[in-house]
Amino acid sequence: VVFSYDPVGWGLPYGGLFKGELESELVDLASQILCIVLDLEVSGVREDSATTLEEYMKDSFGARAEATEDDDEGEGEGETQKEWRVDNSVLQAETHGLGYRHSCALQDLDTTRTAIWGSKVVGRQVDDTWLEVEGGGFLPMLIRDCQVIVPFKAEVDAKPQPRNIFRFLLKHLDRDAEIDLIYAGIVRMLSTVHEATQTYLPSSKKGVGFYQEALVLLWHLLTINRAFTQRVTNHLDTNQILMPVLYLLQTAHGHMHMIGLLHSASFVLLVLSAERAFSVRLNEAYSGNVPLSIPAFQGTYADVMTLTLHRVVSDSLGRAGNDALTEMLLTALSNISPYVKCYALETCLKLLSLLERCARPSILWRTASSHSGLMFMVELINNVIQYQFEGNAMLVYSILRQKEVFHRLSVLKLPQSKGDASSTTPAPLPSEVSTQDGLEAAEDETSRFLPTPSEDGATPAAAAAGAVTAGDGDASVASASAASVADAATTSATTPASGSRAPAPPPPSWQPDEETLLTVKKKLPLQAVMCMINYLQPRIEGMLMEGDVSDQAAVLKYLKNTTMVGVLPVPHPIVIRTYQASPYTSMWFTSYVWGVIFTRSQRMPMYDWKKIKLVVINN
Image 1: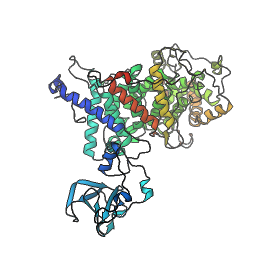
Image 2 (image 1 turned 90 degrees about the horizontal axis):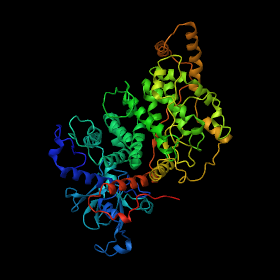
Image 3 (image 1 turned 60 degrees about the vertical axis):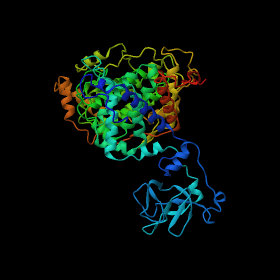
Image 4 (image 1 turned 135 degrees about the vertical axis):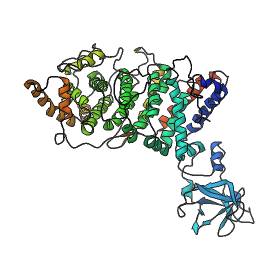
C-alpha cells in the first residue's frame, strides 16, 4: 500500500487530483502504522534469532505461555510432554523452518504452519521419527537421516527471543524485486516535496504530507536490512534518494520545529556515506534542478552534497547543542572524501573556509570535544591528497594559498587566556569579507582566500552536547553520540533562538591543558599536507619569480602535471566511520515518530493532549 503509491498520478499536470484523497489518507495512515510497528525494539532482543509465528504473536501481546514438565504430565497416552528444539545444524537446509504435518506422513504437509529453525516446541515423541506437538500437528524428527528435532537445553532457553515479527520480516527481506519496489516508492514519495515547488502551473503537482514517515521508514530499512543497503548502493541510483534528503535537510535547517527532520536526514546521510558504492557514484555529473540554496557551480553530486552540508555546518558551528549534528555531517563528508575525483572551485573555497573556522581558538578550545570538527576536516584534506591528488588541482591550489592555517596547526599552542585567545594567530583575517569577495579573489594569483563571515550570536557554549567518536580503521558512531543527538534536539527545541544565557547549564569552566593539547595534536595528521606544502610552495614561488607562470591557469596546469609519488608518506588506510545502533538512538527515534504522529493527527480527537508530554526538560 505504501511503497506502490504514486502521488503523481498519470504524470500530467493535476493528474494527482484524479486519484482522490481516500488513497492518500490510506497511505498516510499505513505509513504511520509501519513506523509504529517497526519501532518496537525491546532491549536485548535479537532479530536474527528465530521462533515460531505463534510465539511471535504471544510475545507481541505479552502473553507468552511457558510449558513445564509438571503441567504436561499425564497427557497423551501417559507419555510426558517435553521441550524440543527445531535444529538445522546437521541438515543445513536453506529454508526458514520445518513444516508441520497433519499426520505422521511427510506428504501430509500443513501449509499454514512452520516451526522456525532454532525455535522451541512442546510435545511428546510418538516413535523414533515423529513428534506430536502440543496444540495439534506433527513434526518429523528425521529428514534425510539428519536429526532435526533435538532435546531442548537450558542454555538455549536463556537466549533472548525476538518480540517483533515486523522487524524480523523486514530484516529478512532479500528479494531484488521487492527491494526495488520499496526503494522506488520511497524515492517517489520524498521527491514530491521539492517537485511540488517547481511547477509552472500553480499546485499542478502535489507533495505528500507523510514525507517524515517515509524518511523514518528509509532509516529502518538501511539500519535493519543489510541486503537492502547492499542492493540500493551497489545496483540502484543512490543519487535519486540523495537529492530529496538534501532538500529536506536544507528545509529543516534553521526551523526549530523541524529539528527532528534535520537530525533524521543527517542520520540517513551518515549511514549512506559509509558505503563505498554510494561515494563512488557521487562522481557523476550533476545536472538536476533541485532548489537548493548553494552557489552556482559546474560539478558532480559530491559538490552538491558538500555545499549543502557546508551551509548547515557553517551555521551550526560553535553553537550550543549543535555539536552532535555538526560532527555527524562532517563525518559524512570525511567518509566520501577518499572517493571524490574532483571538487569544483566553489566547493574548494567552502572547504578551506570551514577548516579555517574550525581551527579558530574560540571554536577549537570551546569544549573538551570541539576539536573533532577540525580533526574531520584535516582528515578530509589528507584523503584527497593521498588518494585523489591528480584530479583535485584546485583544492591543492587552495591549500597552498591557505598554508598559514596549516603552519599554525603544526605549531599548535594553548590559548593564553579567554581574552586574548586570538593572539595565537599571527595576523587576523577579516571576517567581514563576503563569500562573493572570496570567489573574486580566487581569480587573482596574488590574492588570498578569505574566510566566510562569522555568525551572529555564535558565542562559545558551556555544555558539550556530545561528539561523534571513532577509532582507527572501521570505526563506529558511539552510543554517547546518539544520546547527545537526543539531548541536542531537546535543547534546541526548548531554548530560544537568541543567545539567551538563562537556560545554559554550568558556566564555561573547562580549560584545556597540556594533556589536552597533546591529545589534539595526535588526532591531527598533518604530515601529508605539510609534505605537500613544503614540496610545492618553493617551486611555485620560484616559477613566479622567474616568470614561468603568470596567472592561476598556469599554476593549475603545473599542479595537474605534477606527481607526488615518492614525496608524500605511505598512504594511510582509509577510515570509514559507520553507524552503530544504540538504545539512545532508538529512544530518540521513538520520541520523534510519536511526535510526528501526534502533530499530524489533529483533525480527529485521537489523543488526550492534556496527558501527552512532547518535551521533557532535564534540570
